[in-house]
Length: 482
Image (cartoon, rainbow, N blue to C red; front, side, top):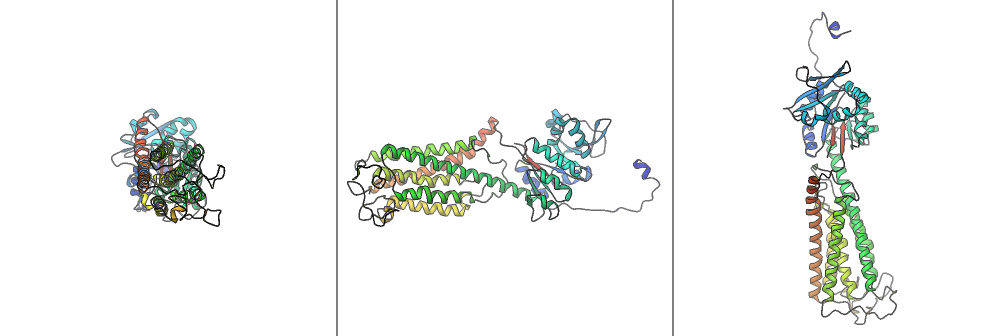
Protein backbone atom coordinates (compact mmCIF):
# COMPACT_ATOMS: atom_id res chain seq x y z
CA UNK A 1 0.00 0.00 0.00
CA UNK A 2 1.41 3.35 -1.03
CA UNK A 3 0.96 6.71 0.61
CA UNK A 4 -0.98 7.91 -2.43
CA UNK A 5 -3.52 5.09 -1.96
CA UNK A 6 -4.13 6.06 1.67
CA UNK A 7 -4.22 9.83 1.14
CA UNK A 8 -7.02 9.68 -1.43
CA UNK A 9 -10.43 11.41 -1.48
CA UNK A 10 -9.83 13.10 1.87
CA UNK A 11 -11.35 16.35 3.11
CA UNK A 12 -8.97 18.82 4.75
CA UNK A 13 -10.04 19.61 8.33
CA UNK A 14 -6.99 21.46 9.67
CA UNK A 15 -3.54 20.99 11.23
CA UNK A 16 -2.60 19.65 14.65
CA UNK A 17 0.59 21.35 15.79
CA UNK A 18 2.79 19.52 18.30
CA UNK A 19 5.78 21.46 19.60
CA UNK A 20 8.62 20.31 21.81
CA UNK A 21 10.62 23.53 22.06
CA UNK A 22 14.39 23.44 22.24
CA UNK A 23 15.82 24.68 25.55
CA UNK A 24 17.21 28.20 25.40
CA UNK A 25 20.70 27.28 26.53
CA UNK A 26 21.25 24.63 23.84
CA UNK A 27 22.92 26.89 21.19
CA UNK A 28 25.34 28.27 23.80
CA UNK A 29 26.27 24.74 24.93
CA UNK A 30 26.87 23.58 21.35
CA UNK A 31 29.06 26.64 20.73
CA UNK A 32 31.01 25.92 23.91
CA UNK A 33 31.58 22.34 22.75
CA UNK A 34 32.75 23.56 19.35
CA UNK A 35 35.22 25.95 21.01
CA UNK A 36 36.36 23.04 23.14
CA UNK A 37 37.26 21.09 19.97
CA UNK A 38 34.35 18.73 20.54
CA UNK A 39 32.43 17.79 17.39
CA UNK A 40 28.70 17.28 17.85
CA UNK A 41 25.90 15.38 16.13
CA UNK A 42 22.32 14.34 16.81
CA UNK A 43 20.82 10.85 17.05
CA UNK A 44 17.04 10.98 17.05
CA UNK A 45 14.07 8.73 16.45
CA UNK A 46 12.23 11.63 14.82
CA UNK A 47 12.09 12.30 11.11
CA UNK A 48 15.49 13.26 9.72
CA UNK A 49 14.08 16.61 8.49
CA UNK A 50 12.92 17.42 12.01
CA UNK A 51 16.40 16.60 13.28
CA UNK A 52 17.98 18.86 10.65
CA UNK A 53 15.70 21.76 11.59
CA UNK A 54 16.56 21.46 15.29
CA UNK A 55 20.25 20.96 14.48
CA UNK A 56 20.32 24.25 12.59
CA UNK A 57 18.56 26.05 15.44
CA UNK A 58 20.99 24.58 17.96
CA UNK A 59 24.06 25.42 15.88
CA UNK A 60 25.03 21.83 15.13
CA UNK A 61 24.77 22.70 11.43
CA UNK A 62 25.95 26.08 10.21
CA UNK A 63 23.11 28.07 8.54
CA UNK A 64 25.12 28.64 5.34
CA UNK A 65 25.66 24.92 4.77
CA UNK A 66 23.36 22.88 2.59
CA UNK A 67 22.34 19.48 3.93
CA UNK A 68 22.54 16.21 1.99
CA UNK A 69 20.50 13.28 3.30
CA UNK A 70 21.23 9.59 2.84
CA UNK A 71 17.51 8.88 2.77
CA UNK A 72 16.70 5.43 1.36
CA UNK A 73 18.15 2.28 -0.13
CA UNK A 74 16.89 1.59 -3.65
CA UNK A 75 18.24 -1.35 -5.65
CA UNK A 76 21.14 -1.73 -3.22
CA UNK A 77 22.12 1.89 -3.78
CA UNK A 78 22.01 4.74 -1.28
CA UNK A 79 19.69 7.50 -2.39
CA UNK A 80 21.14 10.93 -1.55
CA UNK A 81 18.75 13.91 -1.66
CA UNK A 82 18.90 17.60 -0.87
CA UNK A 83 17.15 18.41 2.40
CA UNK A 84 15.74 21.64 0.99
CA UNK A 85 13.65 20.17 -1.86
CA UNK A 86 14.12 16.37 -1.93
CA UNK A 87 15.91 16.66 -5.27
CA UNK A 88 18.62 14.10 -6.07
CA UNK A 89 22.03 15.06 -4.73
CA UNK A 90 25.60 14.17 -5.59
CA UNK A 91 26.73 11.03 -3.81
CA UNK A 92 29.73 11.86 -1.60
CA UNK A 93 32.71 9.53 -1.83
CA UNK A 94 34.06 8.30 1.55
CA UNK A 95 37.61 9.20 0.47
CA UNK A 96 36.75 12.84 -0.28
CA UNK A 97 34.43 13.64 2.63
CA UNK A 98 36.77 16.24 4.13
CA UNK A 99 36.54 18.32 0.96
CA UNK A 100 32.90 17.48 0.25
CA UNK A 101 31.73 18.56 3.70
CA UNK A 102 33.52 21.89 3.59
CA UNK A 103 30.31 23.65 2.63
CA UNK A 104 27.81 20.83 3.09
CA UNK A 105 26.51 18.77 6.01
CA UNK A 106 25.46 15.14 6.00
CA UNK A 107 22.39 13.53 7.53
CA UNK A 108 21.46 9.87 7.53
CA UNK A 109 18.52 7.65 8.38
CA UNK A 110 18.75 4.57 10.56
CA UNK A 111 17.91 2.42 7.53
CA UNK A 112 20.95 3.68 5.60
CA UNK A 113 23.21 3.38 8.63
CA UNK A 114 22.31 -0.28 9.11
CA UNK A 115 22.82 -0.98 5.42
CA UNK A 116 26.27 0.63 5.42
CA UNK A 117 27.29 -1.11 8.61
CA UNK A 118 26.31 -4.48 7.16
CA UNK A 119 27.63 -4.20 3.61
CA UNK A 120 30.31 -1.50 3.74
CA UNK A 121 31.47 -0.97 7.36
CA UNK A 122 34.61 0.93 6.33
CA UNK A 123 32.54 3.56 4.52
CA UNK A 124 30.08 3.60 7.44
CA UNK A 125 32.87 4.75 9.77
CA UNK A 126 33.91 7.53 7.40
CA UNK A 127 30.34 8.74 6.92
CA UNK A 128 29.65 8.59 10.66
CA UNK A 129 32.52 10.98 11.44
CA UNK A 130 31.00 13.60 9.13
CA UNK A 131 27.30 13.05 9.81
CA UNK A 132 25.54 15.72 11.88
CA UNK A 133 22.08 14.12 12.15
CA UNK A 134 21.04 10.48 12.41
CA UNK A 135 17.25 10.40 11.97
CA UNK A 136 14.56 7.73 12.22
CA UNK A 137 16.80 5.62 14.44
CA UNK A 138 15.54 2.81 16.63
CA UNK A 139 16.96 2.14 20.12
CA UNK A 140 19.13 -0.57 18.57
CA UNK A 141 20.37 1.88 15.94
CA UNK A 142 21.45 4.27 18.71
CA UNK A 143 23.35 1.48 20.43
CA UNK A 144 24.96 0.56 17.12
CA UNK A 145 26.11 4.11 16.38
CA UNK A 146 27.52 4.65 19.87
CA UNK A 147 29.18 1.22 19.96
CA UNK A 148 30.81 1.84 16.61
CA UNK A 149 32.61 4.94 17.87
CA UNK A 150 33.60 3.14 21.06
CA UNK A 151 35.05 0.22 19.09
CA UNK A 152 37.24 2.44 16.91
CA UNK A 153 38.82 3.96 20.02
CA UNK A 154 36.89 7.20 20.44
CA UNK A 155 36.04 8.19 24.01
CA UNK A 156 32.27 8.53 23.74
CA UNK A 157 29.67 10.36 25.82
CA UNK A 158 25.96 9.87 25.25
CA UNK A 159 23.17 11.98 26.70
CA UNK A 160 19.46 11.26 26.39
CA UNK A 161 16.19 11.53 28.26
CA UNK A 162 14.05 8.59 27.21
CA UNK A 163 13.76 4.86 27.68
CA UNK A 164 14.80 4.37 24.04
CA UNK A 165 18.18 5.92 24.92
CA UNK A 166 19.01 3.46 27.72
CA UNK A 167 20.99 1.05 25.57
CA UNK A 168 23.12 3.79 24.03
CA UNK A 169 23.68 5.43 27.43
CA UNK A 170 25.03 2.14 28.73
CA UNK A 171 27.14 1.47 25.62
CA UNK A 172 28.94 4.82 25.81
CA UNK A 173 32.00 5.44 27.96
CA UNK A 174 30.00 8.11 29.78
CA UNK A 175 26.21 8.36 29.90
CA UNK A 176 24.26 11.39 31.07
CA UNK A 177 20.53 11.02 31.73
CA UNK A 178 18.51 14.17 31.13
CA UNK A 179 15.52 12.88 33.08
CA UNK A 180 14.66 11.01 36.26
CA UNK A 181 12.94 8.21 34.31
CA UNK A 182 14.41 4.97 32.97
CA UNK A 183 17.49 6.68 31.51
CA UNK A 184 18.68 7.73 34.98
CA UNK A 185 18.80 4.08 36.07
CA UNK A 186 21.43 3.00 33.53
CA UNK A 187 23.39 6.25 33.16
CA UNK A 188 26.25 6.95 35.60
CA UNK A 189 25.34 10.67 35.58
CA UNK A 190 21.93 12.32 35.90
CA UNK A 191 21.51 15.97 35.02
CA UNK A 192 19.93 18.00 37.82
CA UNK A 193 18.71 20.77 35.50
CA UNK A 194 17.76 18.33 32.68
CA UNK A 195 19.66 20.24 29.99
CA UNK A 196 22.68 19.38 27.86
CA UNK A 197 24.70 21.99 29.75
CA UNK A 198 25.54 19.01 31.94
CA UNK A 199 27.67 17.70 29.05
CA UNK A 200 30.09 20.64 29.30
CA UNK A 201 30.12 20.34 33.08
CA UNK A 202 31.06 16.66 32.91
CA UNK A 203 33.79 17.40 30.36
CA UNK A 204 35.22 20.26 32.43
CA UNK A 205 35.14 18.25 35.64
CA UNK A 206 36.60 15.22 33.89
CA UNK A 207 39.48 17.20 32.42
CA UNK A 208 40.08 18.88 35.76
CA UNK A 209 40.15 15.51 37.53
CA UNK A 210 42.60 14.11 34.98
CA UNK A 211 44.89 17.15 35.17
CA UNK A 212 44.75 17.10 38.98
CA UNK A 213 45.57 13.39 39.12
CA UNK A 214 48.58 13.89 36.86
CA UNK A 215 49.70 16.88 38.95
CA UNK A 216 49.64 14.79 42.13
CA UNK A 217 51.37 11.94 40.28
CA UNK A 218 54.19 14.23 39.09
CA UNK A 219 54.57 15.69 42.57
CA UNK A 220 55.00 12.27 44.13
CA UNK A 221 57.58 11.44 41.45
CA UNK A 222 59.40 14.66 42.32
CA UNK A 223 59.22 13.88 46.03
CA UNK A 224 60.83 10.49 45.45
CA UNK A 225 63.55 11.89 43.20
CA UNK A 226 64.47 14.74 45.55
CA UNK A 227 64.52 12.25 48.40
CA UNK A 228 66.82 9.96 46.44
CA UNK A 229 69.22 12.79 45.60
CA UNK A 230 69.29 13.77 49.29
CA UNK A 231 70.12 10.21 50.30
CA UNK A 232 72.94 9.93 47.77
CA UNK A 233 74.50 13.28 48.73
CA UNK A 234 74.15 12.50 52.44
CA UNK A 235 75.76 9.09 51.97
CA UNK A 236 78.65 10.61 50.01
CA UNK A 237 79.28 13.22 52.71
CA UNK A 238 78.61 10.73 55.57
CA UNK A 239 75.88 12.92 57.05
CA UNK A 240 72.12 12.76 57.49
CA UNK A 241 69.20 14.94 58.48
CA UNK A 242 68.03 15.20 62.06
CA UNK A 243 64.80 13.62 63.21
CA UNK A 244 62.48 16.61 62.84
CA UNK A 245 63.82 17.20 59.31
CA UNK A 246 62.70 13.72 58.32
CA UNK A 247 59.31 14.20 59.99
CA UNK A 248 58.60 17.28 57.89
CA UNK A 249 60.09 16.01 54.61
CA UNK A 250 58.61 12.51 54.64
CA UNK A 251 55.44 13.35 56.52
CA UNK A 252 54.01 16.79 57.09
CA UNK A 253 55.10 18.62 53.92
CA UNK A 254 54.56 15.74 51.53
CA UNK A 255 51.15 14.74 52.91
CA UNK A 256 49.71 18.25 53.03
CA UNK A 257 51.01 19.22 49.58
CA UNK A 258 49.90 15.98 47.92
CA UNK A 259 46.50 16.18 49.65
CA UNK A 260 45.73 19.79 48.72
CA UNK A 261 47.22 19.82 45.21
CA UNK A 262 44.24 18.05 43.52
CA UNK A 263 41.62 20.19 45.30
CA UNK A 264 41.45 22.83 42.55
CA UNK A 265 38.06 23.40 40.94
CA UNK A 266 37.41 22.95 37.23
CA UNK A 267 38.04 25.78 34.79
CA UNK A 268 34.98 27.86 33.94
CA UNK A 269 35.52 27.48 30.19
CA UNK A 270 36.01 24.26 28.26
CA UNK A 271 39.53 24.20 26.88
CA UNK A 272 40.19 23.72 23.17
CA UNK A 273 42.37 20.71 23.99
CA UNK A 274 42.37 17.94 26.56
CA UNK A 275 45.04 17.24 29.20
CA UNK A 276 47.49 14.45 28.65
CA UNK A 277 46.50 11.04 29.97
CA UNK A 278 49.95 9.49 29.51
CA UNK A 279 52.05 8.74 32.58
CA UNK A 280 55.19 8.61 30.46
CA UNK A 281 54.25 10.95 27.63
CA UNK A 282 56.25 14.01 26.50
CA UNK A 283 54.24 16.39 28.67
CA UNK A 284 54.70 14.37 31.86
CA UNK A 285 58.38 13.60 31.29
CA UNK A 286 59.28 17.17 30.27
CA UNK A 287 57.59 18.51 33.38
CA UNK A 288 59.12 16.04 35.83
CA UNK A 289 62.61 15.89 34.33
CA UNK A 290 62.88 19.65 33.84
CA UNK A 291 61.95 20.44 37.42
CA UNK A 292 64.17 17.65 38.77
CA UNK A 293 67.19 18.95 36.83
CA UNK A 294 66.52 22.50 38.02
CA UNK A 295 66.21 21.39 41.64
CA UNK A 296 69.47 19.44 41.45
CA UNK A 297 71.23 22.44 39.90
CA UNK A 298 70.24 24.69 42.79
CA UNK A 299 71.39 22.10 45.32
CA UNK A 300 74.82 22.04 43.65
CA UNK A 301 74.97 25.85 43.61
CA UNK A 302 74.09 26.00 47.30
CA UNK A 303 76.80 23.49 48.30
CA UNK A 304 79.42 25.25 46.16
CA UNK A 305 78.43 28.55 47.78
CA UNK A 306 78.82 26.96 51.24
CA UNK A 307 82.22 25.45 50.50
CA UNK A 308 83.43 28.84 49.27
CA UNK A 309 82.72 30.61 52.59
CA UNK A 310 85.77 31.57 54.68
CA UNK A 311 83.95 30.73 57.93
CA UNK A 312 82.97 27.25 56.77
CA UNK A 313 84.33 24.31 58.76
CA UNK A 314 84.03 20.80 57.43
CA UNK A 315 81.71 18.38 59.19
CA UNK A 316 83.08 17.11 62.51
CA UNK A 317 81.46 14.98 65.18
CA UNK A 318 82.09 14.13 68.82
CA UNK A 319 81.27 10.52 68.02
CA UNK A 320 83.36 8.19 65.87
CA UNK A 321 80.27 6.11 65.05
CA UNK A 322 78.79 7.55 61.83
CA UNK A 323 75.92 5.06 62.01
CA UNK A 324 74.44 7.03 64.91
CA UNK A 325 72.12 9.43 63.07
CA UNK A 326 71.74 11.68 66.12
CA UNK A 327 75.43 12.58 66.02
CA UNK A 328 76.05 13.26 62.32
CA UNK A 329 73.25 15.71 61.58
CA UNK A 330 74.63 18.82 63.24
CA UNK A 331 76.81 20.39 60.53
CA UNK A 332 76.64 23.09 57.91
CA UNK A 333 76.30 20.67 54.98
CA UNK A 334 73.16 19.14 56.48
CA UNK A 335 71.72 22.59 57.19
CA UNK A 336 72.26 23.82 53.63
CA UNK A 337 70.94 20.64 52.01
CA UNK A 338 67.83 20.69 54.18
CA UNK A 339 67.16 24.39 53.60
CA UNK A 340 67.46 24.16 49.80
CA UNK A 341 65.97 20.73 49.09
CA UNK A 342 63.46 20.95 51.92
CA UNK A 343 61.90 23.96 50.25
CA UNK A 344 61.86 22.04 46.95
CA UNK A 345 59.23 19.75 48.51
CA UNK A 346 57.07 22.88 48.79
CA UNK A 347 58.07 24.79 45.65
CA UNK A 348 57.69 21.76 43.34
CA UNK A 349 54.07 21.43 44.44
CA UNK A 350 53.57 25.12 43.60
CA UNK A 351 54.82 24.50 40.06
CA UNK A 352 52.35 21.64 39.60
CA UNK A 353 49.47 23.70 41.02
CA UNK A 354 49.13 25.60 37.75
CA UNK A 355 45.88 24.37 36.23
CA UNK A 356 46.56 26.11 32.92
CA UNK A 357 43.30 25.69 30.96
CA UNK A 358 41.81 22.70 32.76
CA UNK A 359 41.68 23.81 36.39
CA UNK A 360 40.74 27.10 38.03
CA UNK A 361 43.43 29.73 38.57
CA UNK A 362 46.24 28.58 40.86
CA UNK A 363 45.31 31.09 43.58
CA UNK A 364 41.77 29.66 43.77
CA UNK A 365 43.03 26.40 45.24
CA UNK A 366 42.62 27.93 48.68
CA UNK A 367 43.59 24.90 50.76
CA UNK A 368 46.81 24.47 48.80
CA UNK A 369 47.65 28.18 49.02
CA UNK A 370 47.13 28.06 52.78
CA UNK A 371 49.60 25.20 53.22
CA UNK A 372 52.04 26.69 50.72
CA UNK A 373 52.15 30.04 52.51
CA UNK A 374 52.27 28.38 55.95
CA UNK A 375 55.23 26.11 55.14
CA UNK A 376 57.02 28.88 53.22
CA UNK A 377 56.80 31.16 56.27
CA UNK A 378 58.00 28.31 58.48
CA UNK A 379 60.93 27.53 56.20
CA UNK A 380 62.04 31.11 55.58
CA UNK A 381 61.78 31.93 59.29
CA UNK A 382 63.92 28.92 60.23
CA UNK A 383 66.44 29.94 57.57
CA UNK A 384 66.80 33.57 58.62
CA UNK A 385 66.58 33.31 62.42
CA UNK A 386 68.67 31.65 65.11
CA UNK A 387 66.08 30.77 67.76
CA UNK A 388 64.45 27.80 69.43
CA UNK A 389 62.11 27.68 66.43
CA UNK A 390 64.97 27.08 63.97
CA UNK A 391 66.51 24.64 66.43
CA UNK A 392 63.54 22.31 65.84
CA UNK A 393 65.36 21.36 62.62
CA UNK A 394 68.84 22.01 64.16
CA UNK A 395 69.23 25.00 61.81
CA UNK A 396 71.15 28.06 63.00
CA UNK A 397 71.20 26.40 66.39
CA UNK A 398 73.51 26.46 69.43
CA UNK A 399 73.39 24.75 72.80
CA UNK A 400 71.53 27.65 74.39
CA UNK A 401 68.54 27.22 72.07
CA UNK A 402 68.74 23.47 71.51
CA UNK A 403 65.46 21.53 71.74
CA UNK A 404 64.72 17.83 72.09
CA UNK A 405 64.57 15.33 69.26
CA UNK A 406 61.39 13.43 68.35
CA UNK A 407 62.53 10.48 70.45
CA UNK A 408 64.08 12.49 73.31
CA UNK A 409 62.62 13.82 76.54
CA UNK A 410 65.28 16.49 77.13
CA UNK A 411 67.02 19.05 74.87
CA UNK A 412 69.92 17.59 72.92
CA UNK A 413 73.19 19.49 72.72
CA UNK A 414 74.74 20.25 69.34
CA UNK A 415 76.85 17.29 68.26
CA UNK A 416 79.93 18.95 66.76
CA UNK A 417 83.23 20.32 67.98
CA UNK A 418 82.18 23.96 67.74
CA UNK A 419 78.75 23.50 69.40
CA UNK A 420 76.80 25.48 66.80
CA UNK A 421 75.22 25.35 63.35
CA UNK A 422 74.56 29.10 63.20
CA UNK A 423 75.50 30.60 59.83
CA UNK A 424 76.22 34.30 59.16
CA UNK A 425 73.18 36.38 58.23
CA UNK A 426 74.70 37.28 54.85
CA UNK A 427 74.86 33.59 53.87
CA UNK A 428 71.35 32.95 55.13
CA UNK A 429 70.15 35.68 52.78
CA UNK A 430 72.02 33.96 49.94
CA UNK A 431 70.15 30.74 50.71
CA UNK A 432 66.86 32.64 50.83
CA UNK A 433 67.55 34.14 47.39
CA UNK A 434 68.45 30.70 46.03
CA UNK A 435 65.14 29.26 47.26
CA UNK A 436 63.13 32.10 45.72
CA UNK A 437 64.96 31.89 42.38
CA UNK A 438 64.54 28.09 42.45
CA UNK A 439 60.78 28.58 42.94
CA UNK A 440 60.56 31.08 40.06
CA UNK A 441 62.65 28.86 37.76
CA UNK A 442 60.58 25.68 38.17
CA UNK A 443 57.27 27.55 38.01
CA UNK A 444 58.39 29.27 34.81
CA UNK A 445 59.51 25.95 33.33
CA UNK A 446 56.21 24.22 33.99
CA UNK A 447 53.98 27.14 33.02
CA UNK A 448 55.72 28.64 30.00
CA UNK A 449 57.70 25.71 28.57
CA UNK A 450 55.66 22.61 29.44
CA UNK A 451 52.12 24.03 29.41
CA UNK A 452 52.47 26.69 26.71
CA UNK A 453 55.39 26.00 24.38
CA UNK A 454 55.34 22.18 24.34
CA UNK A 455 51.71 21.83 23.06
CA UNK A 456 52.50 24.22 20.18
CA UNK A 457 55.57 22.20 19.25
CA UNK A 458 53.50 19.01 19.52
CA UNK A 459 50.89 20.35 17.09
CA UNK A 460 53.59 21.22 14.54
CA UNK A 461 55.13 17.77 14.89
CA UNK A 462 51.75 16.04 14.66
CA UNK A 463 51.76 14.75 18.22
CA UNK A 464 48.05 13.93 18.73
CA UNK A 465 46.37 13.54 22.08
CA UNK A 466 44.04 10.65 22.76
CA UNK A 467 40.81 11.06 20.80
CA UNK A 468 37.45 11.43 22.49
CA UNK A 469 33.81 11.26 21.46
CA UNK A 470 30.64 12.40 23.07
CA UNK A 471 27.17 11.33 21.82
CA UNK A 472 23.57 12.00 22.57
CA UNK A 473 20.20 10.58 21.65
CA UNK A 474 17.44 13.08 21.05
CA UNK A 475 20.25 15.57 21.60
CA UNK A 476 23.86 15.68 20.61
CA UNK A 477 26.75 13.46 19.72
CA UNK A 478 29.95 15.21 20.72
CA UNK A 479 33.41 14.00 19.86
CA UNK A 480 36.98 15.13 20.34
CA UNK A 481 38.82 14.24 17.17
CA UNK A 482 42.27 15.68 17.89
